[in-house]
Amino acid sequence: MTSPNQPALSVLDLVPVREGGTPAEALADAAVLAQAAEAAGYNRFWVAEHHGMAGVAGGATAVVLAHIGAATSTIRIGAGGIMLPNHSPFVIAEQFGTLDALYPGRIDLGLGRAPGADQRIGQALRKDLGRASEYFPQDVAELRALFTGEPDIGIRATPGHGAKVEMWILGSSLFGAQLAAALGLPYAFASHFAPDYLDQALEIYRRQFRPSEALERPHVMAAMNVLAADSDAEAVLLASSIDQSFVNLRSGNPKQLQPPVPGYLQTLPPGQLAMLEHMRQVSAIGSKATVASAIAQFAERTKADEIIVSGATFDPAARRKSLTLTMEALD
Image (cartoon, rainbow, N blue to C red; front, side, top):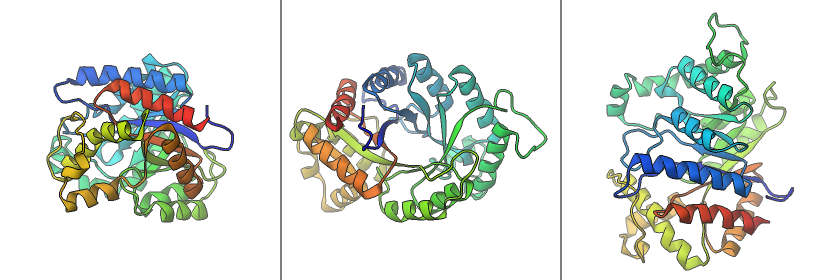
């Protein structure tokens, strides 16, 4: 467990599908990873919504969370996040109200404004994603009203009404920080892939925060890429799988999670290398000592209440070991 002077640690998982693997295997691995996170003392286990990607099996996020909940008993589980423009607030209230009924006191609902999909996916979802994003603040307010009953909007979600779901606003820019502050909700920043506005967003959120019935004071969670191994060299090698995923995604060619490649960074042209280093500058990749130092510096920089660790390894056992080593490093 982390000490009282350190931020709580949580886990973000994309339910990665390995090259040559299947979604069924990815979902089984996610449950085992959540069990490892629970045993190691992590606070939350979140799954992110992505669509139309061969290497990600978490698209039906609420269903995945039901699977994770059945495999665990104490760790909080949630969405990091649900991309609300893709959905009706009423349907999300029903889904997460159901999760709260199944696993009371354990359910988080992180909400994002970016659709996390292209227009083809938008058509498949029967959504005008650009226009739907404009209504994000209203949809968040409607969703909260469906849970709390205040204000009374003339309809009740069952399950949903009265559910004790912990709502979060997610962000990678300044918009989410302002909305989370205005609504008095906890705020999570996606610095593991979009670090540019991290410091400014946290400053705005804390300065503009308005207390609410849900939250008396600002509460921040910031994301890091974290991969711990027995040595720096081993961690760098393992991290080459997620490095390939970043490069493939930004090149418009997302794939299943690839095996590690020795010296992968040295194979990249300067432009791709610069892009990758910029995207993952908020990272802790190395031995226990290296990871402990990087996390301590990030915690000091952000004064975050929680840090959520992201990452993936081709061998699922290596990710589980990474979670254990990371928690040991901070003891």
